[in-house]
Amino acid sequence: MSDFTFPNLLHSTPPPGPESIERDGRRYVRDWPASKLVPTVPYIEKDGLRYLLDESGSFAEPNPLRFIDLEPPAKSPGYKIAERQAPPKKVEKKPKAKELPEPEEEDASLPPSFLKLNKMTGLQAVKDAMRDVIALVKLKEARGNLGLPDVGSTLHLVFTGNPGTGKTVVARLIADIYRELGVLSKGHLVEVGRKDLVGEYIGQTAPKVEKAVEKAMGGVLFIDEAYSLFQNGDDSKDFGREAIDTFVPLMENRRDSFALIVAGYKKEMDEFLKGNPGLKSRFVGTLNFEDYSFKELFRIFQSFCVTKGIALDKAAELKVREYISELQKQSGSDFGNGRAMRNLLEHCIKQQARRLSKTNRRYWTKSALQTLTEADIPKEVKP
Image: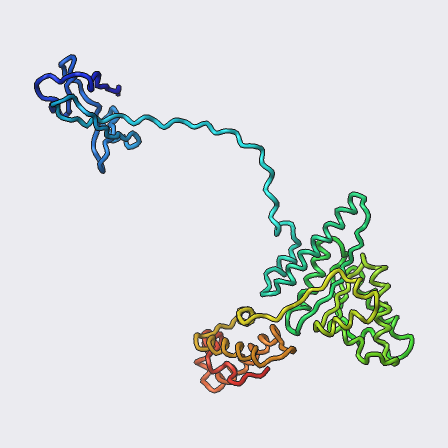
């Protein structure tokens, strides 16, 4: 279909007669200079716009028309002429300057076990500190690959915090992290206490310490409540100090073969690190495990419930929240944190068993066995 124009439309005086007529279902406008009728471009109107028709008379949606109000000569009626809309001009895109590659997402370069740690409830300070430790380990490895001097970093760590804050769980994850980073060959965890390290008589302590370190080669040696090694303070008959004195050279001479993690209350651990002048400097850093907040404790309780296939009805959930809030108020520095939530759930399950035992077994449906009610939540708070 060819396009039609309206020559001299604005500059000629229209002759007498109709300015447009309808004929054979089409509208014609007069071509003033030639005084002949010229068929207009076929169109239809829709939603206040005019649209071109293609040669077959089909509706050509992609070809909208726009209206232009033309000012006619004096004493002539105005016209609204449909005009084909000009196609948009193509804007040439200027070539972009060469961009630097997007930085690699941090999580993609982190060990899988750190991602497990990162999913644990709370412990943000611990997670941040471990990111730094991982970065330091990678820096040390990169320098070694390029033949640069060793920066002297160790793998040994200090954990401080109250019970139930996940120190043992995190120690296991760190053993896995070190193995995944390639700095420890096995990544196993060996847990020891005072009785495993301190002898009763002269000459027994050093061999015990050396045996524990040998067992932890390629992995992590974990000492919870490490401050107990100084059980009797300056008592000359206590060999806890000898254990510390034995650890110090082993931590230095075998620092690339095993990691020592010592844990305990913050105040007591500060005193522990003063037990030997060279002890504190042997650790790469201290990870502080803060007490869980109310929301974090309830989330931990819920995670224990999910693991055991337990659900709370609305009344029971409200009572659990009240119990946790009151438990936090009454507890001191020995608050059990996550461990207290596990103990609470175990107590609730015992109460549920006692309640159901008083009913007929035919009412022990799957839902009844999985749901804790208000009656199952302890009424008295016991820190």
